[in-house]
Length: 435
Image (cartoon, rainbow, N blue to C red; front, side):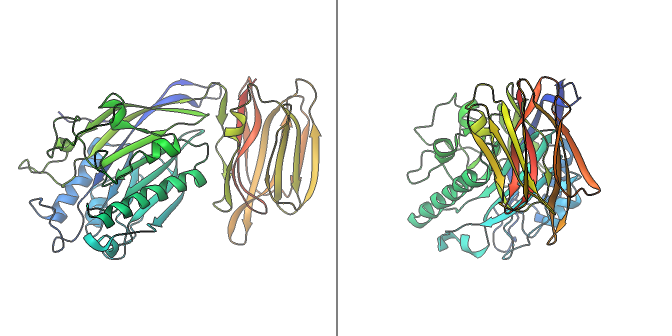
C-alpha cells in the first residue's frame, strides 16, 4: 500500500481563523545524480529514467518539504515528473552546481546557498561547490521554520573527517547567527555516523539545542555504541544511515517529531530495484503555537541583519510594554519598545525623527500597519502606524500603496519585534504576548 501523506492543517484555530496546531512531513533523499560516467552509484537502470521515477514518487506521496542532494545532471527529469508548487532553481550540474535542491508545498523567503569553507580532495568532494542551503519556510500563519539542506564531505580518511567536522560546525555557526530564536530543521546527507571517531553529529544538539529524530524516535533517546549498518531499502530503523534529521522549536512554536521512517520501499523501480544508493528518510512533525508568545507574519524585504526578540521576551513572565518609540523620515528608520520590566528592545538605525508614546496602566499595543516600497533596488519598509487598546496611535515614515495590518487576537498584545534591519527597518514582524 502506498503511504500517502501531505500537509495536514488546523485541528484548532485562533479567533482570527489561523490554525494553532497542525502537522507536516519532511523527506531527505540523495538522488544519486552524478553523471553515470563518473559514478553509477551501484544502482541498476538508466539514471534519467530513475530520476524521473523519483520525481513521480515525490508527487504521488505529496511530501510537505523535500530536500535532495546530488541533484546534478538529471535535474530536469526530476522536476519534469514532480508537481510541488515551490521548488528551488538548480545551481547546475557537475562541476558548477551544489546538487542541493528543495521541493515544497510551502513558500519560503531568504533562500541562500553557502559553499563549505573546507573540503577534502581525497574523494573528489572539492570538484563541486558542495555546501548547504538555508531558507525560511512558511508552514502556516506565524509559523516560520528555518530549513537547512546539507551534503557534507564524504569518506573516512583523516582529511575527510576533518573536513566533515568543519562542515557541520559551519552549519551550527550559521544557525547561531541566522536562526536565533527560530524553529530549525537540518536535514540531508550528513555522511556522518555517531559511532565513527572524528565525526561530530552531536554538534547540533550540544551547540544549537536540537534533537536528532532518529535518536529520539528509533533509539529512545540513546546514542548508538556499536555501528549497525542498514541494507537498502532497510526494514528496520534500528540501524544507522548517514542521512539525518535534526530539529528544534522556539518560544513561539513547539515542534515535535512524531514518526521516523526509512522509506526506500516507496522508491523502487518496476522490477523492485532501488532508485538510489541512499534510503530516503521520512519524518512526521506536529507543530503548536506557543501558549504565552506568538509571532505575526513578517513584511518587507530580504536586506539587513536578522533580529528576533523572542529569547529576551521568553525570560519575562508577562511582558508588558510601557513605551513605544518609532523613528522615521522618508523611510522607517527604527522601532523600539521599553518594557515594564526594564528591558529596551531596539532595532534599525539612528536616523529619522523619533516619536514616542507612553502607555497607560492596562493599555496595550493591539495592531500595526506597515508599508513597504523600493529603495536602492531593495524592498524596504517606509512607514508604520501603531494602535493601542485605547484607540491611540503613533506613526512615522511615508505611507505607500503597499501596506499590511497585523492585529493581535483578543487577549494578546504586541510586545516585541522580529525581522531584518541595517540603517533602517527592512523587514518587520511582531511578537505577541498573552495578557
